[in-house]
Figure 1 (cartoon, one colour):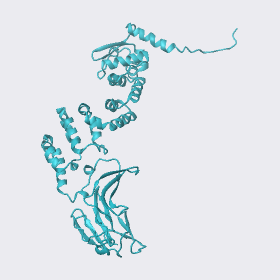
Figure 2 (cartoon, rainbow, N blue to C red):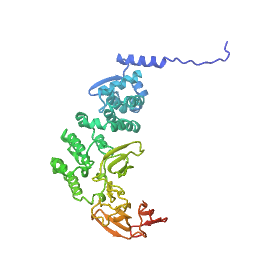
Figure 3 (cartoon, one colour):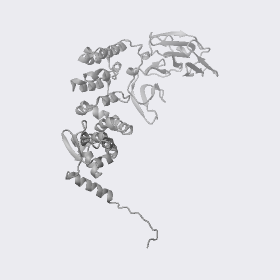
Figure 4 (cartoon, rainbow, N blue to C red):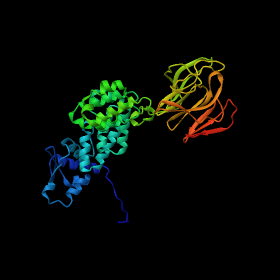
Length: 436
């Protein structure tokens, strides 16, 4: 008796049994109606199965059923190994992957547009990326993978650049783009520019065809940071630096930079920037709690979580000033002997016209401005001097309105602000490049 009851059932194992049946027919070469060929190796298959899994095959076969050419498809850019892997996946839903076969498999999957196989390849790369295979993964990712995997692999390579550059075999096997990316890094603190130059030359000499990349790679070497003697002894004697006009220009620009010693702070560019990815706080000299004058140079990171001694000044000094122009540190004035009257100021920068201590120095338009301070015999001064690195000379400029020492100052938007102390000055005065 029909009571109107209807029900549908689903056999969970049916899709797997269907694949097993199709795979069995393929293994027996039964009912196969198309052949895919790669590297001269033919693989029989079924159009309906391929068209169901491959967007490429669907477009190729639909509407071309009577075209004989659609029965024998040659895939020029696929390898036999990669094609076999993808066909096995289409018929079994299983994809055997390894780093040695992955690029071939991924390329075949890309050609046939088998999206599920492509996704499995991407997942394999993402989950198996490590320090040992990061270069290989990055090379594959640059060809096939989305930005997320490329960036992740590039990040691994970035963290491993030290071991990569130290390993001759890994260095010469680098992709040109990867080597370029490494040379572009600002945090290569462990390597001098001369060592990076040697790495590039090692890579270039490995294959004569790489000579055409010399200009592009060598322009990323910061030649002005190589000492002049090393430029002449090691770089200048390299054949590519003599025979290639552009590489020769890199060398000449660096030698010209070294010949302009006092002008260097104003000649800054990307090529003259020390490779570092962080700023540091420096403390130079000063007087200790037991009235001893020190010459120590200490550095702290951006978080001031610790201090590291970098070296020493040429002489102990305190009540001095320090300014920076183009990453060049100038230590100016001050005194090296403690006396109650402050009688021992000394010039540290050549040419300062008036010896001074307990003053303020700032930078305006790449010029150092020294404002007032204490002089010989403990007197105060209101004189202001300007130092031009390009001329290596000091010159008096408009005086400060009052004599003052132990004052504070800062530069903001091209204006130097001074706020006094020892003469009980309460005003905050500003200095523009021309006058107060």
